[in-house]
Image 1 (tube, rainbow, N blue to C red):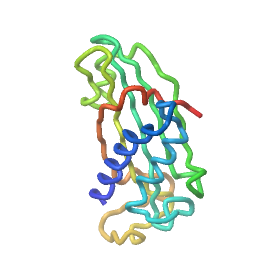
Image 2 (image 1 turned 90 degrees about the vertical axis):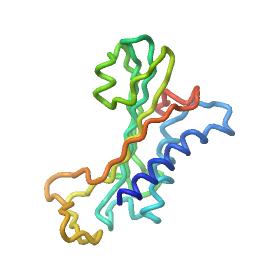
Image 3 (image 1 turned 180 degrees about the vertical axis):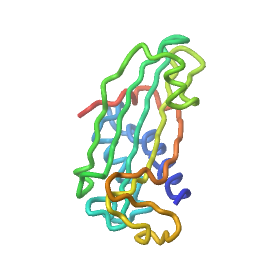
Length: 178
């Protein structure tokens, strides 16, 4: 499972870097991020099993944290997410790209992930946090786990997660919410 989620994360990063190669508008959009989530999770789910009613008891979630250093203690930050939790097909993947917040400090950015801290003004970084989440009322036997308790009757549970920090191509971010 750890290898699968790591592979999905690297696949998502690769698609992010290549998605705008043939587009005139290079800036990434929420619809692009939805497609990236679906394409990157196919190495494990293979079909629409990542969608409700989650036959494997899991769904996929990607959180993106984009930062741009303005000066030594001033960063811009944009968070975005995509999830297969509420959808039933690739066209119904949920998600949002929130507005860019300014005046984030070095310590606030470091608290999100230490590798997001940039070394020079104008530098950009992107944290891709890929997570498999156990759906409500799932049982570990759906995945063949008989010792590891993955389910929860009343709440969602983050099961496996992998973080990757990249330097995105110039102009890709901040993402558009359309």
